[in-house]
Length: 95
Image (tube, rainbow, N blue to C red; front, side):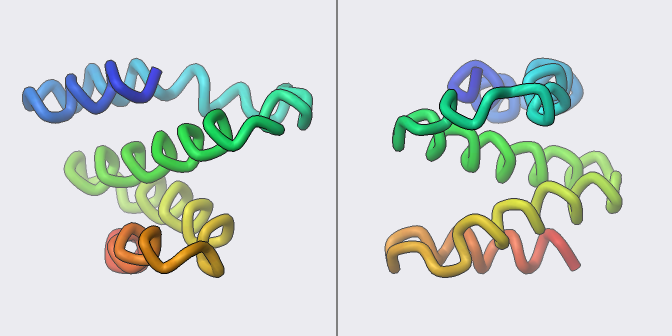
């Protein structure tokens, strides 16, 4: 999910990238918590949220940009130092 959406975004297909991510992100409330027990899955989910925030920012959708940026900030604000540049970026996007 994430690699395909990131590729679309990188190619300038911003709306298509959003359409690729949205069904999965919108279904999160129905996902069993143990699905995200894997660090790889959890990390990919947060990366997908950050990408969705970037996409919303690029499209001028401030509400969605704030929502997804704040999710990343909440989940990774106390993460390892190598993840903090993404958190700082999300603080800017979420303004």
